[in-house]
Image 1 (spheres, helix red, strand yellow):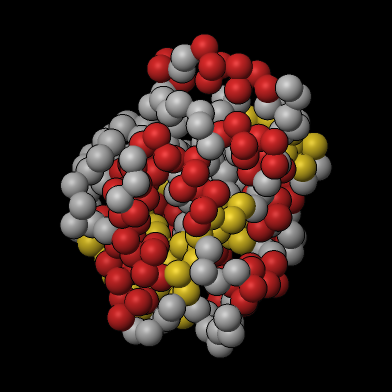
Image 2 (tube, helix red, strand yellow; image 1 turned 60 degrees about the vertical axis):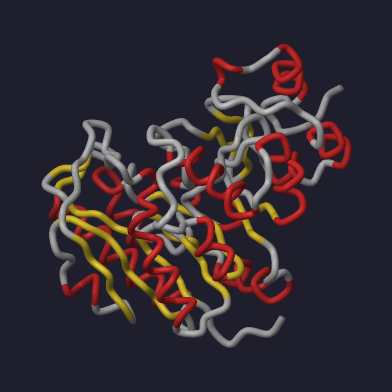
Length: 304
């Protein structure tokens, strides 16, 4: 597949205070402006669509966008998520529809508070595997959790997954709501979760993408983030301890239920996961699922 350009979707939200990163509205305006300018520099050929809600974004943000879709404030929970809008899919959906309607057959859905520094890596897979759904952490092999922070691939598929006309499937977890949306969009049963991932997906670790998390690092490390062209010390998930790293390599998770690139492409593990029962949460794991979790050690290697 040959592409000349693609769309990038950057969801944002700006409120007086955000507990995810302990950021004020002013700090988020500055952080988002830095992210938007970085995406414009890294992906000059891309059509950037900023979508969000809350206080109006500054010109320092919107000047880097080709389109802006902005909604009124929503009701925020104390933990920083939004009621009736898991993974903020109701704001992402219109941006994906706009990209598709403007003729962009491929989209990169990212976040406004994270930067994907390895632009050439993304372009390589856009060119070579443009028909796949490219995924990263936190995608699970135990329950229908789909990494919702970053994914890229066919615009039509992404628009279907994030379709805001679909009722909320799982209010309290955006990963599960997005995973169930993939199942619903493809008309597949829950029992075929892993089979579906392997059929339509491709997988990349956060370090492959150079995916840096601004939100949990901006207050303490803004100067470092601004000065460093690839700040791997701030890879996504490191600061809140969702992922563990040694250098740029993922060595573990807060829960042993998520894929790495190694486990996703491990032939023996693929064979086992074709038939693994599916749970909705850690509390629902049966004995067989616990054995699978135990088989995948913290370094992402299969030991059976």
